[in-house]
Length: 409
Image (cartoon, rainbow, N blue to C red; front, side, top):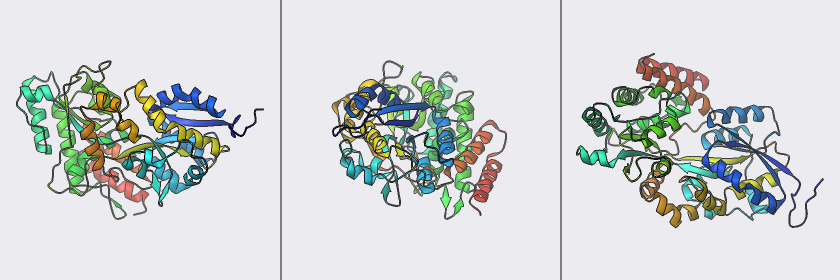
């Protein structure tokens, strides 16, 4: 057995990490030999699709399993892990083992997000907001102004769809049931003056939510692509990259793919703008603020070694290297966002991305322990309304009832 040494105190220990299938995970995997050589720590990465990630994490957590020392997930689930006591605050490790971690290295909105009860529980791997992406060339050709309202968004979708005889869809959005459709539809919920929670009540049955869902489903059914009810992040992104749709509203990280010549046919043709609004004074911004981070399991048998991996994987040095490996505009280190590489590659949307993050809504998704179930119920309602299985009012009423029963109301 290998034992630690003064310069490698945790040598011989093994850290097991549950990772999200993402470009950042691929980059970390490629860079991992450097960390293992420097520290003597062995790291096993179990990389799984995002849709399977949380259920796998929860299965282990609920059993008190030490199968994973570190879990990579978005903060909407990280918050629930923190409240349940499945993950631990990071300050004690940051104070004791600071070779890779410096809080000031992170972009402030990202490092402020993964906190519960004023304590830091996660290290941000990647972050994002939401914005409108539109085809500048088509808008110029058909004399369309950049939409600032939802009515203008619909008019632009209708004009391009009609002018091209449906060969270019007016808009594409996510329709796939679950977090996929909920994440994008939330922009419409807030844009129409709605919100997820009013006191202890889930407000999915509000008039604002109903208007948002009717608008969303009508927009896609009239001017969107066939089969959109099956579109997740990847399907939606690819259709837009292939030049088959005039607009989309989605994550700011999509900009990196739009501007990548290796996989996009619309490089240099995309404009970026804030998410349009439908009411003059919405309760909250329709721009998201999402962080996907690394969390330290309460059940880890090697927490110090696990922390060293976490802090290395999110360090500015690793994030600068990540950008050399694959499209990655979700980097959370200031040094990476301010780098010339970032500006050269992502200058087309960098300023709009930062503006969206600056007004990012930390309550864009419900920030309560039951968020996973609430998102599930809402996703079913959106999907059923989209395919016509239920009318929007009935779908939302059912979802609201289930959510509020869950909350004991």
